[in-house]
Length: 235
Image (cartoon, rainbow, N blue to C red; front, side, top):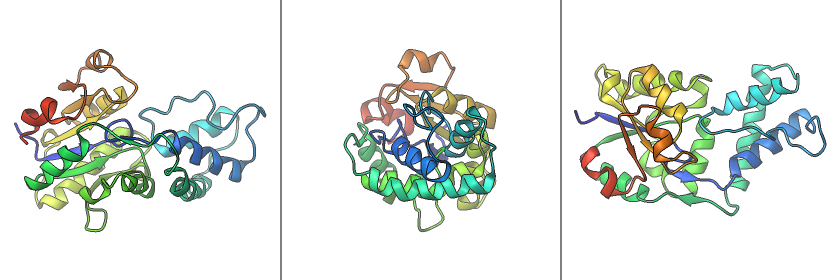
C-alpha cells in the first residue's frame, strides 16, 4: 500500500550537520550549568546522540553527573541552544545527503504529504533544514505535519504526534499503517514499530544496511536516491 504520508527524520536521514548541533548544545549547557565535572570533558562527552531527542539528551547529560533535572531549565537550555545553532550551522561539515533534494522535489510535484518525525526541537529543525534549502518542503509557515522533541522524550510519542497532525491536515483519521517513517537509526525503527507505523531505514547515518536490517524495518536502502526509493515511494 502506498503511504498517505511520509515522515522524515532529519539528522543522518536528510542531512549531516558536521557536529553543529553538538557544539551548540554544549555551549548552551555550559552557559546555564557551568563547566562539566571534569575540565577535560564537555557536557556531552562520551554520549552517543544518534536517535535521541534534544530533551532526552539534556536530561541524560544532567543526570549523568548528578545534576537535578528541571523542565523549565531544560526549556531555557534548548532556547539558548537554538541561538547558538544559528551560528554553528554555518561551520564546516554540513551536507545535504544524496538524492534528498530530488526526492523531496518529486514528492512535492506529485502532491504527496510529507512531514517531519524528529528528535529536534522545532526551531532547531528549521535551522538545520534551512541551511540546505530543505525547509521549503515542510510547510513550517502553513501548519505542516510535524513530530518534534516537544511532543515527548520517547520517539514513539513523537511519531504518534506526527500521525495526529497528518490526520488533521488530511481531514480524516489516519491509521498508523498509512504513515511511513523514514530514518537512519535503530531508534527510528523501534519508535515506528511502537507507534504502529511501517518504517524505511536508510544507511546514510552511522548504521550500515546490515545493522539496520537486523532491527526488522519494512525496507532498508543505502541512500534516498531515486534508484533506491523511486519505485518504493511511487515517484
